[in-house]
Length: 292
Ligand SMILES: Nc1ncnc2c1ncn2[C@@H]1O[C@H](COP(=O)(O)OP(=O)(O)O)[C@@H](O)[C@H]1O
Ligand SMILES: [Mg+2]
Image 1 (cartoon, protein in one colour):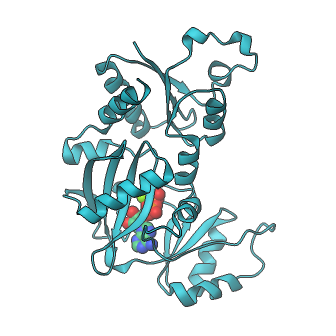
Image 2: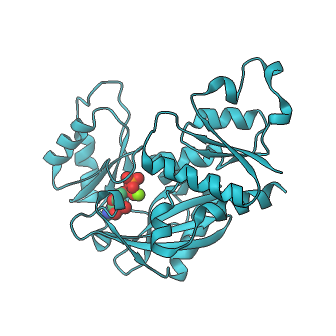
Image 3: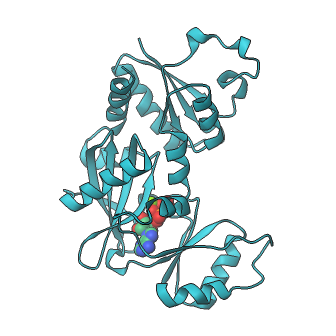
């Protein structure tokens, strides 16, 4: 019987996350594999400093890393564990500026994007950079914290003054400034990829907000993705080295796919409710095939 660890964040306690873990545990049980949940703060259970304490018979055949604690993922990889997704892939997806940088100069279409300049100060003493980017991005402009989810750290600003005010509010977090894709206002497509295959997709819509996140009031619709959207989702996962992901794609002016973001730990309860496809089962099946 194959053994795996499911690494999760010990400080994220909510039903939404517990549900995800339960789905993965159930899928593992059905595939007759032993999956043990471990929180990232259980340092001595995961990687004891004294390696003589490691019971190698207990060592898992694989690790599902359902967290963003990239250093821990790297440590596990350094110890020879097979980690899904890899530390590199998680790090790239968890930082929207890194996703942009890694995919720049490829044929993946993304909104025009600038990374905010780094400062040693607590707050910028000079906002000239906003004047510099507004010429090519225009307004409304999207400001996004590099690390954020559920649409909660994504802002639309209407002019220079709002931009500066928003940047002050962000208060020192890294961010990007991005072209607003008006043609995709309140709609996008979420495509789940597992092991180079499209497993399911849905359209998300929100009539009251440009952000489509379900947590933010968006709703889901059954949707058959186009060939171009599917190709984009697969190519993105290949380029970022993802074993599985939820790829979010917007609609360009002529309906062409424009990449919004990539989620290395995409939640799968909503997509199940919408499509009946159990992504957790696909992930477990894929991992078991991969390690055999
Ligand atoms: N450049 C953009 N133009 C138009 N809408 C955007 C843009 N970027 C993000 N959005 C909207 O905001 C939502 C949240 O942004 P996203 O980058 O996916 O952050 P999060 O990680 O919080 O989900 C997207 O699903 C999309 O609806
Ligand atoms: Mg998103």
